[in-house]
Amino acid sequence: QKEVEQNSGPLSVPEGAIASLNCTYSDRGSQSFFWYRQYSGKSPELIMSIYSNGDKEDGRFTAQLNKASQYVSLLIRDSQPSDSATYLCAVTPTGGYQKVTFGTGTKLQVIP
Amino acid sequence: DGGITQSPKYLFRKEGQNVTLSCEQNLNHDAMYWYRQDPGQGLRLIYYSQIVNDFQKGDIAEGYSVSREKKESFPLTVTSAQKNPTAFYLCASLSGRSYEQFFGPGTRLTVL
Image 1 (cartoon, rainbow over the protein chains, first blue to last red):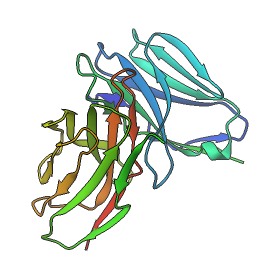
Image 2 (cartoon, chains in turn brown, cyan):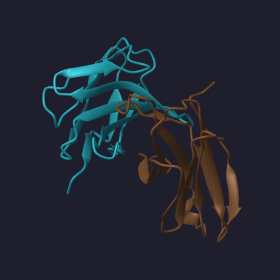
Image 3 (cartoon, each protein chain N blue to C red):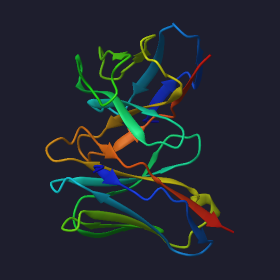
């Protein structure tokens, strides 16, 4: 079982719609959770961090964490073509905050 | 501006040659990382360092070497022992306060 799993996609949504990206993780003691956006040929850019159960909103982005289900998601409201990228989920495992584990990413395509 | 710089942006190497990739940060972060990303793949950890003069192997350390003589610098050497070095190399540092990782712009290495 992979430590951090994401659907590779592509996930296609029309412009203006809500994009929902999902991630599951295997280490029940994981402490910190992150979403990165990576444009083709570029390095990952941190867009959201979440540390406790519930929702965290930042502009058009909402991260949702459910530790009991070992599930973290990212919602993008009013999706724009510029949101088209690969979104990486990252998790800090139990006791080893220095070693972050990344999922393989979900490719999002926003159709104008 | 605080951030992470990597050089060069593109690097071409002949088979049998060692090459060194530079990574510098002025974020005052203790921990630094090297990842490798292949087309359509996730990030794989090569080496990481939690403090000056100390570093640990990641998941794919064979054929690579690192040093950490200064807090700001974490160079990666790709040796001739690395059988398939063509990839996108990413350096990152970790905030000890938020546990967020921040990436440099990357170095694209091609073996001719």
